[in-house]
Image (cartoon, rainbow, N blue to C red):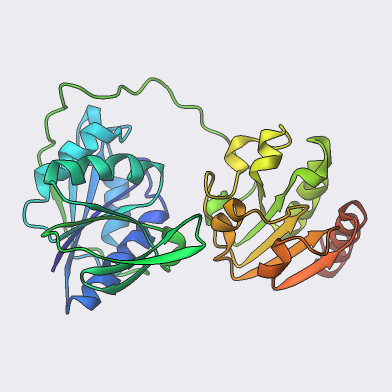
Length: 320
């Protein structure tokens, strides 16, 4: 089986989710009795990202396409580049991120196949599991298409390890499409804490915090644990937290080692974004809140009393 993985990168570095996509490709190859995995890195001055991809375990070859119109990974040029190199492929895998969800449907449509979205488990070479209804139901789907075009949820596959670097082959960049979205600008947020989707510990706050100023309580706890900060949609909509903190069906999907939900009731839309966390701790004044049905540990009480006490205790025990 020949599998093409589309790398998500920033030209000078590979995004971590690409390693998860390669792991998914390896799992698919194992179900198919073996596979040749090729990674496509399309960008500009993107050799550093290609070199990182070449060192991911399971990768057999890296294709590097470079052109000015590929620099910002706009969906239409990326789709053209994928189509230019995917002729012999049996499967094309994108990460289930904003990048992958934007480009994959264009590739699937041009190949006249059905896209398989948000794959969380590979049962066979043609059979996959994916969540539906905000994660409340896991659907098993089978594809008879000659080419499987799919997005895979990075949190469901352990990142690929390292190997001796394989060859990097430069390929011609596909011509820029006549009609395409145009990149205008980018605002890069400088994070003092770990990136939300890659953090090992995530602390999320809900509407019960009451104000943007009260989120400072969580910031102190996050600094103590070296954690990333998240929020429920209700907290974001109320203006307590920025949009890029939102965890849930319409936000980011996370699966850290430890997830602490503070003042979050547990709406299904939020649970869809964090239910795969290894250990879940819920802190809520309402002992009947739905979040406690999912939590491994629960604290019922006033978060404004619990959080400072928890922060102080952890700081003493961790020597912070």
